[in-house]
Amino acid sequence: MGYDVEKVRQDFPLLAGSKPPIYFDNACITLRPRQVIDKVNEYYEEYPACAGRSVHRLSRRVDEEVYKARRLVQRFIHAKKEEEVIFQRNATEAINLVARSFPFRKGDVILVSDKEHNSNLLPWQVVAEKKGLALDVIHSNDDNTFSLDTLKDQLARYGSRVAMVAVGHTANLDGVTVPARDIIKHAHRVGAKVLLDAAQSIPHQAVNARTLDADYLAFSGHKMLGPSGIGVLYGQEKSLQALDVNNVGGETVQDATYERATWEGLPHRFEAGLQHYAGILGLGTAVEYLQRAGLKHVYHHEQLLNQSLHDGLRELPGVSFIGPEDARLRGGITSFNIGGLSGHDVASMLSASKDIMIRSGAHCVHAWFNKHGINGSARASLYLYNTEEEVSSFVEEVKGVARLGKRRRKR
Ligand SMILES: Cc1ncc(COP(=O)(O)O)c(C=O)c1O
Image 1 (cartoon, protein in one colour):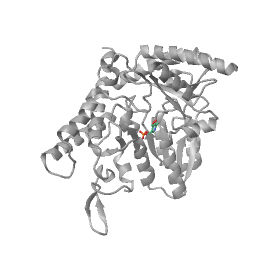
Image 2 (cartoon, protein in one colour):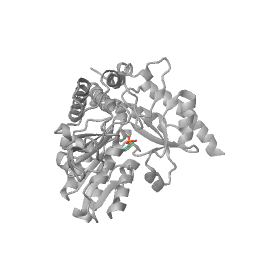
Image 3 (tube, rainbow, N blue to C red):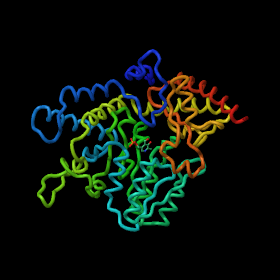
Image 4 (spheres, helix red, strand yellow):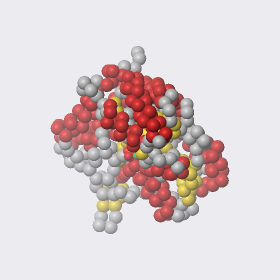
């Protein structure tokens, strides 16, 4: 049976009205289906209690629901054990946890790609500065795809000094997915750990933590139909055990005296204080939703739409793309510029004229834009509820914007 996007759209309250917006800002945050909203409300209405502490009926229900959600996430990413799923506020917090708690030794090297989101660059900059580590950048190929050869050269140069390779699995800048399996294989050969910033991959394509063999994965619920304020740090058990505890307090200890504490096991030692239970439960439901939709269908659907979008824009005067020309390499993301206009100009015009929502600016990848001397871009990012009709309307509208750009360039 084919993918039924109209049926999917019925689940999203914002798309159900007579004049829905065209929402192409999914790399920032996605819309949420009725099922997720209902689950969040269910928590607040039926059992708004804490987990893991009280023994009453409501609390036991929260325990069960949180356990169920953790199992859903575990199965979604094919983690070995549910304890390997640590709930955090978002991908940023998950990456910070690893950066702050990894047992680095002075002189260690951290490698990041040149396209990292600030959330997977700044935590490493800070820890490098604090602990006397070297942070080096893996520069991409000319077409902005990942250069495995450059990584291999760097691994050969630094050898066992490389303690961490932290790369974005799929770039929010241009939608390119890196060859994660190869990166991990080569990094492990020198004894380095690998953190994949999976904020833009896990929502859109099947990711198997076990076969990938990544040490850590970080992702956010709100980029995959889940509630805001909930994210995940996945780690292989031994890689999580290797982390120090930093963020401590309630839930993280088995026992404590005035002098010291004995830490809880996984996952609780990294989940300090009362948690965002509604968010956790909503994330579980989002995962179920994506599983039902089938990530293979979702990925294919986005690729087809992105190809149409690319083909439509390619014809327009003054349009240039960020990343490879081949749209198939860019998943569901198209970053572009129109000569004579800023990304913000483009986004504001689309919003004002046809309620089309895209992102503009540096997309939190300031380092890349600074290096390339480009002043940001406009970015359309697609998801499972977007349609060919929306893409056609978008292209039609950008045509008008491109004409304006042409007039500005002539001035
Ligand atoms: C590739 C990538 N990494 C990390 C993040 C940070 O995600 P969050 O703000 O949800 O922590 C984003 C958000 O846009 C992203 O696109």
